[in-house]
Image (cartoon, rainbow, N blue to C red):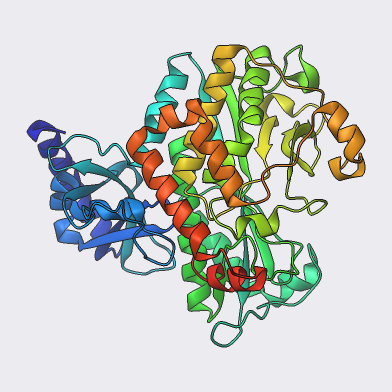
Length: 458
């Protein structure tokens, strides 16, 4: 980013001030997501947006090693307090916030003080990997399903905010005003809501949004969660996106959907491979499947994540794929007959909302690109709950459980040359340090203590 770039950004931001003020905006917040999945923020009065857009706001380099509880997983060299970065908002995505009157939000990117990209900025990483896919004339369309629970309990207590059956109209009626406000707030922010419904667990809800480019989908995931939390606060409700709000419950997932396109054609449909996949669609999916154990280090980044990854809970805890199989880690979705050309996509079911969505999609892009390069092929699909096959059949078919703890996933990540090369040594070192610190923190904790510690953080 040179002086000409900065001046262009300033000029553009100045041209936005009047329109934003007319929409009631008084303060602008910009965020990045750290390696623990926490959205960290800086904000300025609206009049300062041109300065923010051109020169950014300061952020310590230490935030790359922040744990979920704000502990810094240091390198041992004492360098964490030294140095500074600048967070710069993406002006293409400035959004007045419907549930926070007077506020607007934009996703940010982090740069060195020299103006060079920060090598650990996950949004810039995802953009680079998306460009690598575009070099093959392929674009990706992505989305994240958002599941959460609402509570009206006192203090740290979880008590379902709305009663009623899973997927039931009774729960929707109980939370009618809140649910309406969630949907309308998202729509007012320019987010295309495809569906909304009560989910399985007590007090649990889910919203699905339209697919976008990988970077835009990650941005939307951050915005959707912030909006849901803000709507809940206005209704006196507490929000949790944790994969295990209650140890005895099914937990919240954050399923990632992905499809590949070339010249307006969906590469997940219309091919001569199984389930209608094209050769490129299959190779991309095979690359993801092959690296799922390592990908869990970014897609299931907390010990709490592995409380959710249990058999026969629709969590996708076996490394396999299948057509419309909700127990497979990769579910091939084709939709109703006749809709596959636009609806077919790959759903990654084993990941949750503690993940940094930029890191998650970056990992999926890197794994898929490796699959494309190697012309990888998928194994036979699984058409039943894998847990029903029995250990002998699973072994014969080479179907393995995904890692059942963060330590195992982290070792797979460290050993995966594709992911570590794509992420770069500095980012890998920070991810490993944060994960190792969290493993140490909870080494002697019970499942209940882990769930309690993460319940209200994300």
